[in-house]
Length: 302
Image (cartoon, rainbow, N blue to C red; front, top):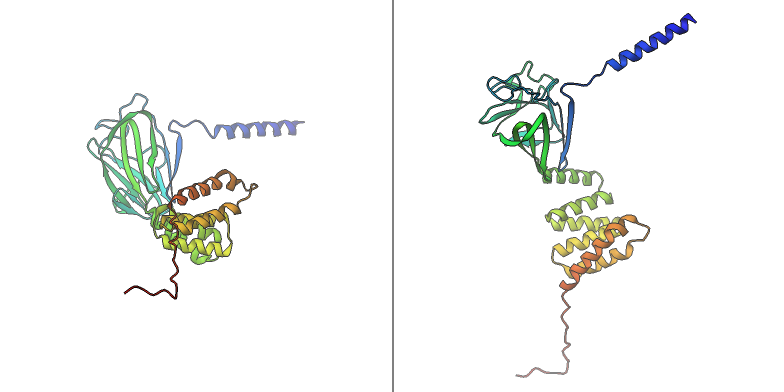
């Protein structure tokens, strides 16, 4: 009986210690994950709150002017990117970095440092991957420090550092087009007979309106390997972009016949797109010129 009581006591003690290991943080952690094009950005930081204190001034206790700041609280703030990117006008290799800053009224200094685990401790300027001057702007009031990437396009974004009524917008950009084409070319070289990869390459070039003859050859190869409504529709769309409407129409019409009612992707999306392509192409079809045969016995007038 005594043994059972001791076991219950130790179990309760262990449970109490486990619960006590985690309590609400004064500066809770946050993670920002944002994709720009095919590049994944991840920012991990902590969010201090003002709580009536002074920030961003010569005498402030929090983030004083002209002093290195970890750009958050607790652990070092980190930024990680899956590909090479532009931090303002500075090219930065893919990797993980400490995101540091030096607040100022006129222009902040924003820093990416290779020693991401150190933050401000042991900071060495020689380890900087990029240093950028950014003019702060006014913003809606934020009690807690906030980092976000917004707005975003397929190749650009703004990394915003926002606290109080101050926002520091840091331009980010990636060479999405070249990264995408390099990845597609590599995939096609590794799997030259893969229909989905060929379709992806053709579809991407079509969406950009670039290298359309190359896109057409990819679509034709995919059709030769496994004909389907999708690659036929791609071919029809590429031909239409090239102004070859007489060739585009039969390809689109055939694509429409290959879809089945049981194919949800076809019925819910592609059928309408193929019909739209047909409707756009049909008015642009040029009738073939009639050829009048010349009678062999008829002589030309002199």
